[in-house]
Image (cartoon, rainbow, N blue to C red; front, side, top):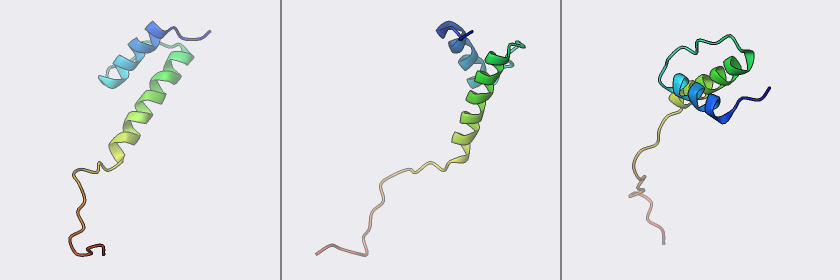
Length: 60
């Protein structure tokens, strides 16, 4: 059975707010774990901020 968009949204909210799922359904657990893994991966990536300026090498 495929998850409804309503249930997917509820699982997404639980995962992003760091709540427990409270369900034993394997499809719901898989979706919850997928979102948690994506969030953990995003935290590991460095965020590039600002504009890089190259003052030493003027282009001619």
